Image (cartoon, rainbow, N blue to C red; front, top):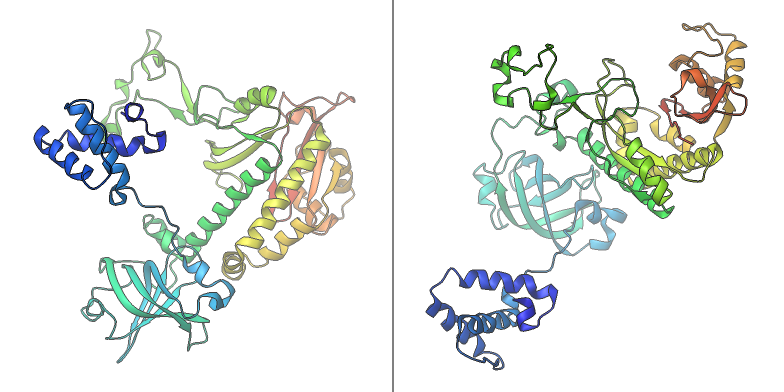
Length: 479
């Protein structure tokens, strides 16, 4: 239809919608509607009276009628933007704030609402009295903690000391009521309790801050690699490959009954071969399939065609280890550099890590200050050191020499050819190099993956781990 009447592709959607609307009406009514609309505009040449000519007329008229066009998308004004520069840029302006009520204080002549829209840790204090339109919703008890509201008012200087500006409300609209049993109150809740309220925990300070920092890290990751000429490659989540070769994979199968039947399903219902083995030919893929442990193999194939690429997505490991360094699911960044050596890899890893840390420290100050005060004291200083200090590089052999000469007793013995343990890595970063990030390179080939490039000495491979105080950030390149 768009080609028939000669309009651009951008208007084709409007035409399709208009024609679809016509098909729901009797033909006579459609013709009348089209001609009525045409009477408001310049005549359109109709070669003959037909359903198509009437529809063309209606479409042309629709395109000229602004009321039938989709409105322009507009970015919402967020609380974080209102509070920029202590709110000086918006003083006296009439603004709209939409969010969820964190706290509510009703006094004799005035009510204080703390509203959070998720854009920042801080709430927007809204002050209203009986003169505000919709105040009856507050008086009647409909507006409670957890409710979603739309408020409009003028930004004024705050009379309190906790915030620089506040919103003097002239209108409030209750968008969604909150159940009386809403569990997220002003009192701090434990993480154990929040695990039982997973659908609501994003409204807490902790989980909100985590989400914003993760968002900033993801944005900075793409920004760094895109600005350095990398191509992002999306690797499959379900795969038949095991990149690491460790066998620690989650199996994906349809041989087990659907989720609502699993509790009552007998084991012998799984199809088997004559040899008593699982008959994978009857599975969805016809063979065993797993959740990916790495996007590496996929990235490597693209690196041989696109040069520098990176994968960034969820990864799954069925490692039965309950430590802070082992997760069943996590997001992993895997750059693949073509025409590069270990020095290039170390430079890329260092530049990336320092870039994303600076981005978070610059753009998530309030959230990081919250973490520093309540979650992990000193985290800002430690991250600042990583971003600002030079990264030291030593060989695995040099690391073994440092550990062997240390005046310290380790739980795990130190010897050449054994993998370094957490206590060894902490000693090197925290005591030997006083909190500097350290890269350990050229590991023995027997303790690294088979695909690592062998060095000229025949004993070591071109592999490296980056160690950061408080965190072990490991990168194992394929060269």
